[in-house]
Length: 312
Image (cartoon, rainbow, N blue to C red; front, side, top):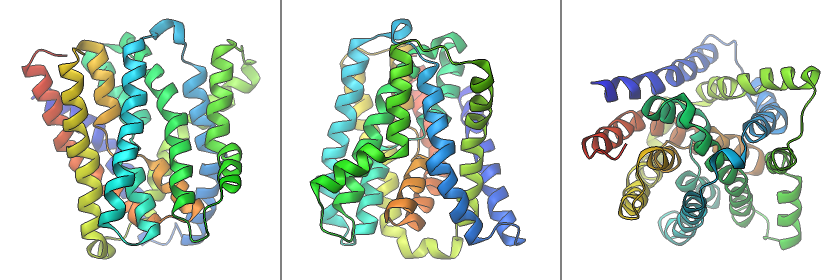
């Protein structure tokens, strides 16, 4: 019952914000043009500040764990490679391919991970997860830019791809956050406080916009793609990599942190970046919303199973 309550407490607030966005659109307080404008603000300002703050507040010294570092990087690169091999054979449309590939390796670790690890292992145990986030955020964003460029309507260009990686606001934020962490930069309070406030509103605004973008009537157009994306993100890859983590001897805080990496639903950044770079943003929204619904069950089952095995 405790595990079920934990899953509900994590997922319910997310759904309330998504529903709020859908409701605001229905009563015409949220228009498509507003969603488009706000999405640009999310991509260029709010999410970069959120990413920078999450990295700036972490320290490698507090949670350096070479095994977890190697596993995190290996997991992301292997899942990316698997998605690049499998999904083009299942989906012919480039705009949908780029979203599905992202959906397999991009997760809601920032929003789901910290509550999961904190509740499972205590508030003081999230330092290791901060290290996982510090590794996953920049790598996921670089892989996402590569994916979107490869499957854009124009012929892929290495020069353009590198330019888009270097100039991507999310990747710039990753680089700045890692630099601030490495050099232990002490940000003045007059700057730090407003940036913390901005970081706090980034995810809620993204969820509200998701609700405004979501159309129940259009889900039937992407049933096959939703099945591929959700199964890949929440069933197939978690079974493979959580199984590997257990066989490699991970347990406790380490395993809880990897749970937050591998088993959380598709992240809002998939929608934000796809909307800006030519991916199928409608499919991205559907994968996020439906994936979040399914994750209420899958996260509960993972927590219950790992608790029963006394691994966390």
